[in-house]
Length: 162
Image 1 (cartoon, rainbow, N blue to C red):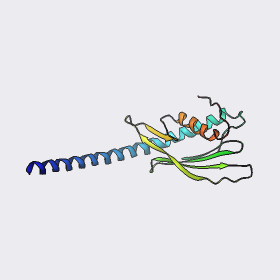
Image 2: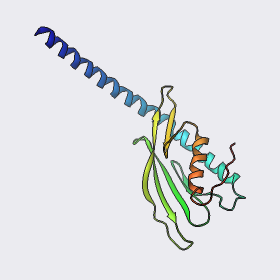
Image 3: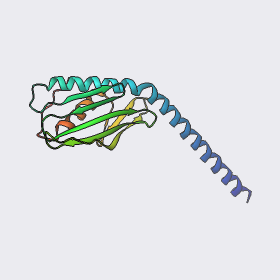
């Protein structure tokens, strides 16, 4: 009976240690996200602007309607077109996404919240952003994917890589 009690006690202690370790890892990851996410998001917005500038000659070029610290709204061109507002939510460890489709020139598109971009931390303490089923660790790659998604609503386009 003593062996059973000792075994149960060890299992409980191990479970408590694992829970404490998970809690400390979540706190550590939250601190990394709080420190690195604003810079990553700013680089993402800069890359979005660069991608839009490269595609300005295309008939369905994307354009940034508004950009504030921690948020950006990207529009496709022509109709129908996709419009997406991205807002950095550090405490929620995500980028909230609001999307609308403008069907006609005279239609006012209403933004609705969609699946967010989740922010995680890898083993090397680098940020990873998950967007539409793919994980991105480079702001340029994420910007290219974002632009492709917005413009891809109409006809497909080729996207130059910096």
